[in-house]
Length: 450
Image (cartoon, rainbow, N blue to C red; front, side, top):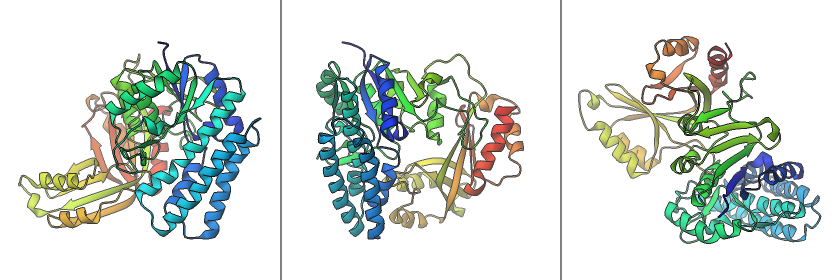
């Protein structure tokens, strides 16, 4: 069996006809690329999320629908034979309009998943036709028939054994004869309801698919040539990283590096699949290889920023010299399936941040039922508009003077929470969003530009 390379293209890489053509060229340069996973066209998911949140303004709703049609028809108009993709895209847009009306009446996570999935369903029709017109043997495949999840809409949990079984049965035979174009981000539950893997889940689904077909490699094509020391839009002197370990990249993804979904690397790591991150706009510039073993492991590797954070502080004098309090807290959190990200404690209080957002893109919230139960144990303070900065590196807590260098640089900033020592690969702190980007700039200048 020929090795299968999986190539995933983000929204900017399929934003319009020109971007799709560049991505098609990238695919054509690697004869092992038989499986292509793509996102919705750039900006489409945001528009669909707005509709899914229940747009009451009919004029705004019409404007969004018009913009969705314009984005996709700008590609259709440049295809030589657009008849079939035009037909199905019009059908999908009609479905979007009906679902938007339903969401305006009453929005829910299940309906949100149904709506936002339409972006990937449309982009794959366009991209498959473009590949065919360039002389490639390409077929479109609905990934929902393979990528099975549970029914947790907005952040579906993949059913790994079933995905592998279905991929072996349905995907691999197609990949032997064609370039298979399929969707990122979406899946389905046991009752064939459309689900999503959470915002930015296209990378994750590509990695799951790569794992299920035992791929020889996974390429993530985006709009920047690899992973940088921080977001170049924040610090202009940020520089590309030629190679990085799975451990470092996982930390970066988990703590806000938008170039990778937090779960992307888990499937690749399980099967030791090398991951390449590059720019479809400038493939000649190379990119970043993510591997198990790398040649260098610097003390400081990168800085990440993750905003839209929620911090919950629990206060109780009963914690003082007592045991069992944290067990009760986490029992309640587990009961309501609340995932905790960071946590710090003192004698009479616990501060924690809630885990990542789901498809609707809103800040994580503490469910009212969970809050009521927690208030029987303690008083609760909830803070929003916070950002998390993570410094990623190697053996950081074993290096004398590194903490002094970091916190000395941040002496003019009000840090709300610090987590250090649990991992050799990160140092995290929380601060208000109004000063977060400046803190990244100052830190980057001190740690990476000198």
